[in-house]
Length: 264
Image 1 (spheres, rainbow, N blue to C red):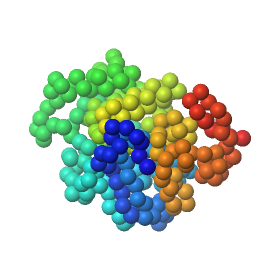
Image 2: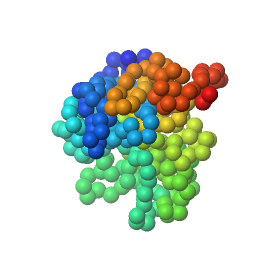
Image 3: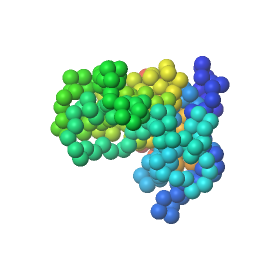
Image 4: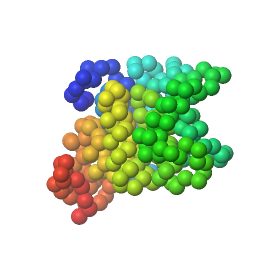
């Protein structure tokens, strides 16, 4: 099932066929068929160690699957060059680390590299895009700061700005709300989701907060004991199913924008 709207019949941005993924002898999923269409936002949920990050990295082409195939915009991932892949999909890793000194603006400009030729320097348009991304991430005015002086939440917002500056069609995010206060969780996810849907892109994110998943995602992928279950979020994100997934009794409560879940 895909969301209704102007992109309903468009070619999938990401598809996986018969995908089997393992890590250290443990199966993450087997025979997974997945189709991510323009305008869709997906949540990947599961307990710690279920393999959420491993699956996300496999879908991104950062590691090989044990079986099956992955396509981006109908093209086999294996047939695309790294530059082509980087222009189409952006990846936000779980952690941000900085070994060498760099300014905030220099760090965000890394997101523009897939769009430059081998010996090309960033131009005025690239700098403008990077500055606009910093504004969107609520990091305006920090361009000259050393990224190593930032707090965890500030560094996370710089990483999100770099991803916005990359301007991919497909966003693959690993715990995008980590280190962010509540205001920035809502503000940045609002911007990301609205950007994705306005531009005909798609978003797949690993998330631990089931209420954020329900708020922003129309599709869900649940990982448990080596099995994956994909489908519309309203059908999968229920108190009964999530209680079984996490092993904690959850109760659905009425919220201002629909149901929310709380431990019993």
